[in-house]
Image (cartoon, rainbow, N blue to C red; front, side, top):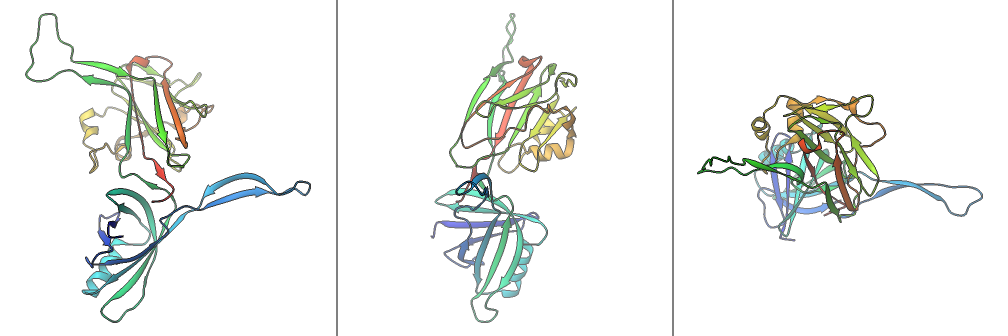
Length: 316
């Protein structure tokens, strides 16, 4: 157990690291609720049929309990707990084992003291995770179509001219999801380098698609504009990013050097949900093989397409 480390961070960036080895300043005694997952299975019964009929299932919210101990600086350490685990706000727990990390978001249910006298004093921290899945620390980026720079210094300019870049495009990408989890939301980025009409992305296995614009309600994406599509459960939206230079978007990177598209949307996004083709859906990754393709009613050669996702895990 000595290779296990738990880091809890509040939304105000107050963090505590818990380990099994020592008090620094807390010793991790026990952690419950991180292994496995529970579901609500819905069935219906019929008086003329034996057993029941399966209707569906949903994953239950996850409850995590941390039992920790401290052996000095009791007042200061209690206050640190209260600052790291404030109620009514969201925190993040990173679980590290054998050098591999997974994260999960939580709300604080309670902080309960155990022994309040003596040298070693313990607390139980109860966390509720409405999204019960652990995830990777960073998004995985899949580039389906983009322009690649061919220009570098020092440079020579021959009379016949020079090619500053070339387009790379793959109409089909396969994403393998071996985690056992279904309905994993993705972020789709369409960028136009010319006029593009009614861009779309398809999920071959499910037959579902997400299209922006349709007959009678066309959507035209102009050069330099972006469309950001979120298909995450509870966050399904479509946004237009207009008149924002690429360099300014690049400034919105997180600590892992990935563009934080949530922050980009928050700063510059304009909702365009009214252009969603109602015959389609917000596609998500399913357990197993996910074959993704893209298209456009016009200007497909001017369309750059990137997809970001994080695999969900049933436990650690």
